[in-house]
Structures are given as structure tokens and as C-alpha cells.
Length: 46
Image: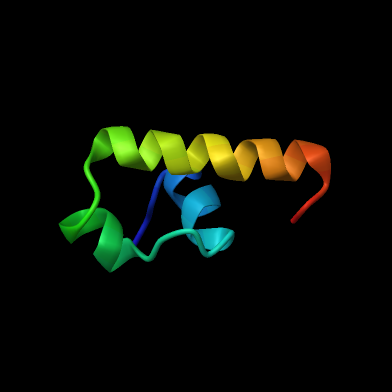
């Protein structure tokens, strides 16, 4: 399955699975998780 870059960043940092993004979280939650992953990457945490 092809996923977008923001989704792959969230899943790649193990903040959420594809199943969770489809069933538990809404799009706002996904962008909040993306922001967490992006900040951690910039700060060198992952």
C-alpha cells in the first residue's frame, strides 16, 4: 500500500500504526503526531 510522506513519518517513528490511523485517530490527530515526529527528527531524538 502506498502512503503519503506525513503518514510514513508517523508510522516510521512508531507513534501510530496504519490501523490506528484509519480507526482510532482523525486527521487532526495525525497532523499532531506528524508534528511530534518532525520536531523529534529535527532535535535528533529519532
